Image 1 (cartoon, helix red, strand yellow):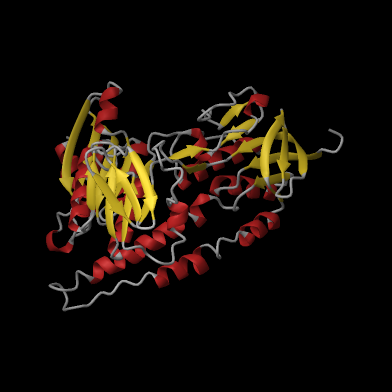
Image 2 (cartoon, helix red, strand yellow):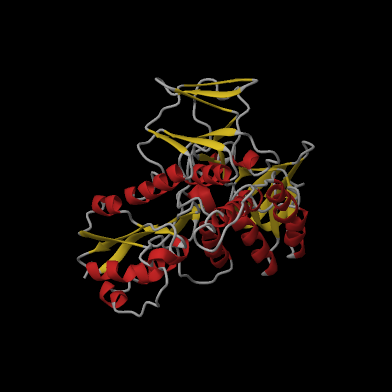
Length: 454
């Protein structure tokens, strides 16, 4: 213990939220040690949000080009993956090098320790570096955990032995296959499936549940499924993978009654929290915990805070950053406001986009709320909107306020911001319905739906 290095705060895991905590606390004058064995910045800038949205943006340009005929003349669209791969490597990820992020952290005044951090006693973290050397830090104020998630693979016989892709492989692709199976119809699977299909890959999406995007309202699932069929994507729902085989010709997925073959297999069947072998037992937490449940200040144990995916409040960069602000306030002695999860928005960047916030109709009913719903269409602008999609609002009829909403269509994620603000501020539906809605905007489609709830 005499060789331990004293500090104020140790941040284990430097995804967007962890990096923000470490840098902000260091700028505030605290002695901060940031620890990560992977890339500083986390999944988002290197394998998730940023590169995948570059891919989506490129696919959208192809999609718009194909709409020229019949609207503005004629055009020949020839997909080319090379500029996409080049931009991801050079502009988004610096060829998956985090030196810029490390320098940003150090310039803020923090100490960076590359390696795996593990709690070895209350207020103590031991870091095992790439060379196996161990360094122990003693945090006088506390430990912040932001260890994130990793791609999960279902226990399908043969899968572990096959060279399948995850999202981390998909964003590094330089040559596209002719065909692909996407195992998993959640947000990541759907986004990537549509991207690759736009570039000419024959894509089959296999989902064990009865519909795509199972977290979303059924109406949203229907809209995305219809778009996939229009894009030539084969969608197999209620399909359980029983075995995976692989040879020089590619992958075969046995679905028990039918099989699907393709050159590549992309597994997008969820993610698992990185909590194993973290030493949680040393601070009174279960060493086999799957999630860490925080209080309103993000505390999970005496002297320990947790943020991001591992808290189970939503695997979103914006959630991690929101929670990071709470931790920064708590550790610098600034009063609230504290955690409020009533209006957590999320967007699936398919075409059409799916924006969701708050409670679904089903979840609201399960909570015993006197539910009233109304639906409309973001495509009410007629010929201006190429991919109309549903609007669905969920109201607490007793209080006269919104508790949930889904906006599907072009700009669906942007239109969602109106609903997020309404839920967060508990603005009466009667007030919302009588506001001015600029014409002919997408968000104007909300007005008739709101009036239906009166």
